[in-house]
Image (cartoon, rainbow, N blue to C red; front, top):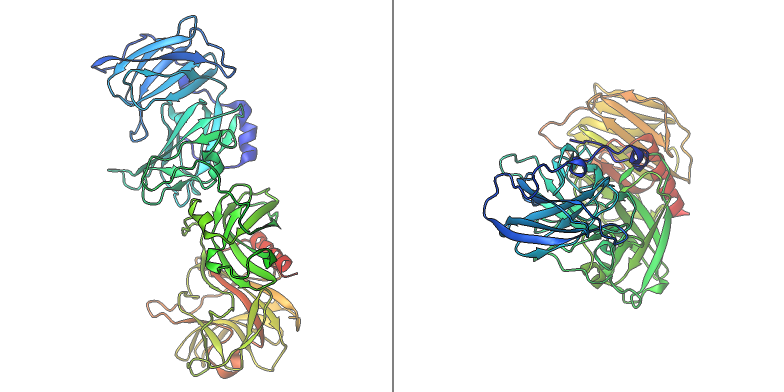
Length: 559
């Protein structure tokens, strides 16, 4: 079994030291013998050829009794091609067969739908590396159907990646078996044919077909049409839940804009990253329906989930979520369409918890729940210009409510932007969680210092991060991470760490949940004195590199 974390640099380095594929070197002792197979009499015949189309004399040909819904090869029949490359095999009627041919170091696979009087030529060539990952799947194993030996099986690593070294080219079926249910594992497959002569083939992210888990698909439609893409032509799933792809969507008559964004170079894969992109809306019709706006990757035609922060006659701001961007990718090109019909021709992106870490977000564009210090709904809110789109400036005593998170427990990251209006001779609260008169948790700024606070009025505990001269009238990016396992908090200002991580254990709320509050605590004098924008609460501890990258990305979008 092979377990790994995908790294194309490592793959390239290993390409020259491929391990031996047992199927390419196995020598038949009894041609036309099948180990225990009965009812033989139907034939498969054809010619073995090389990459240039020349016949390969004396090639070894094996019919493996194998398919995607099996756990492995059940039996085989072996033959040898003649001087003109012709072969013939007698096999069991209507059996599910994968053909394998080899000559020296070259080999290849050929698929057959059944073994009833089939004519099938087999092309052989140099062995390949295949790799990819499955969205939302962290366990289980992938198998190359019709390939033998331990190297034909790869366990998914902790991020859902798999890799195969030294595998045959030709008609490839990758079969996934979910290991969660060992009695009746869920099985899925993807089928493709290799083209060209490249020896490292990386499929884009695989997704279980919505409605039919027996198929895996990719979101890049170019792999399904013409001669495929990147050396692979993926066969359309045979399923009522799949519309066969015959050509890429035509976009010449659809209003669109292409936007290029720089990808932060932080030396790690960006999982679940969000890009703010600004769009010139003059190319779109005046009557554009915002519900029809679609964002795709201009190179791969991957459909991205997106949120519209604002859309006016001159400009729009969209937040586009990317499942993953590999380290080393420097630019992404988005294409924004106003035609929802285009989306129906694309494979939808299914958001899973693996990629969608954001539990709560406030863009401050009208979705905020603002309350007064007495808990009543605020009748007026001082909306203001935000870093990106609208921001919000709370009046004294006001705060915003977030019901879905507990800021006293777990592993998380909180981020927000603020344009501070200065000292008002009172402690100012960014985020809090408070039950009755007890402070469960406060993230605050007072006397030029950021700190954390908890406790009842008679037993207050405060832990300071350190002094910081917060600028007045300038947008500042603040981030706070919590590791509840070690009770460690780390704070960042504009992507830079503020002092050292501090030990602080908030008053855990347990079963009694209290709404989290942004911009205040419910105490009249505690409200934050300044504009706020783009608050996010994420169920992951983001690295210092990640936080710096988000700061630079959003700051660049605001310029």
